[in-house]
Amino acid sequence: MQGGPKWVDSERFDIAAEVDEADATKGEQSLLADRFKVAVPMIRALLEDRFKLVLHRETKEMFVYALEVGKTPPKLREAKEDEQPATLPGDHGQIVFQKMPIVGFVNTIANILHVPVIERTGTTGFFDFTLDPMKFADQSQPASSEGYADLVHSAVEELGFKLEKTKVPLEITVIDRAEQPTDN
Image (cartoon, one colour):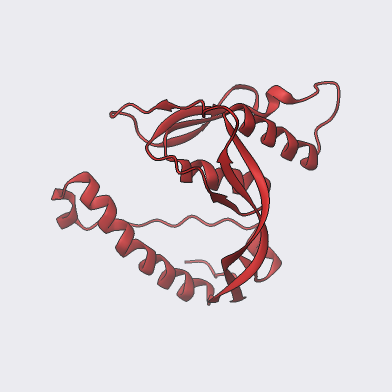
């Protein structure tokens, strides 16, 4: 995303929604798929109404990171069927991924690095693994945001992946207008 007033990068809002009782009888996978198909346009309409949000999409050449398989096979454990997908804080700055597809890992890395990340591993399925950037930190030196990015790169490599900087055409969402909402 690009554009918009400065507050869109710092303000946070909670969105509460309810599921129609009739949907509760559907199978879990079907229900999740249906919710997603319905939820995205509904949430967009809600945001457009509450925030007077005006968006457009455009394609732009941008530098991104591509997540690729590294020199060694990825160190991932297949998730158990009975687990719920989750991203959890671990000890000493670890990030624990539970029943996570690679796209979830890609999104987390993009959020940490504040740079778009694209998936180029071809890895499918759900996995359990831990990202441990602080394992590579020099405890005698204070960490900077640029230094933390290096730690994340090292932790990604330890998992058997690599982040390659590349330039690609990327579809982005541009915020043309947004207003802070008033109280409910």
